[in-house]
Amino acid sequence: MGMTTLDLFPRSTPPIVDRMGPCAFVLRGFALPIAAELVRAVTAIDALAPFRHMETPGGFTMSVALTNCGDLGWTTDRRGYRYTTVDPVSNQHWPAMPATLRALARTVAITAGFGAFEPDACLVNRYLPGSRLSLHQDKNERDFDAPIVSVSLGMSAVFLFGGSARSDKTTRVPLHHGDVAIWGGEDRLRYHGVMPLKDAPHPLLGAQRINLTLRKAG
Ligand code: MD6
Ligand code: FE
Image 1: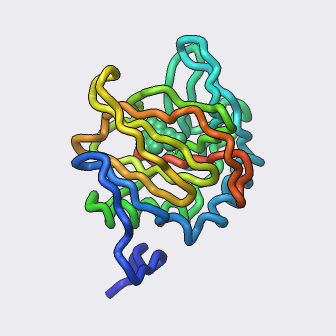
Image 2: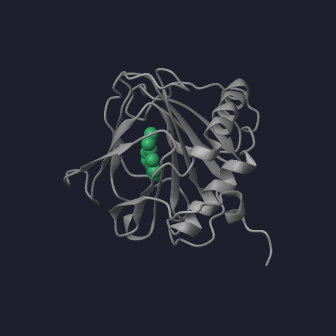
């Protein structure tokens, strides 16, 4: 048998999985084996493409600071939301997606039953105490067949998972350091957001939360 990405994340016990929807899951602590490596990778990404507070088309400045890695990066300004191959601040390509991060996302997709996943974009979000993300759908990607994989690092957050309309009721899902969420299929376009971050410093990251969301955007 050939080497698969599963071999990079050997486990003696099945992962603990919480179900958020028919095609939406949280794999608790799944990224813990590579968490320190991911934190170093985020520091390296920030050195090349610094975190910045982007403006929304409606004229609000986001409380979450953003950057990207991978072939495509998500940006917003007064003209709208879109994916770009270069960082508009530096006019350079976004930093490369770390191979271990890509391998993690592929392994999670297989483990959760989504099959092969080839992410080409990774949005990196940084939350400080009080930062929040209002309810939104992820719909700037070219096709909605691929799932989205989301890795949480640092301080815990309360994730809000809603329905297909903004006004649908939301459920609160705590996301902790090392948790990996994945959703796709019929849940792919569900509204979601993050409650204002509580100030409860994390041993590795201090008073911040980093979230990495991997997508097939192009
Ligand atoms: C966050 N995440 O957890 C924000 N979107 O900081 C997202 O907006 C998100 O976690 C799509 C899929 C997974 C996510
Ligand atoms: Fe999102």
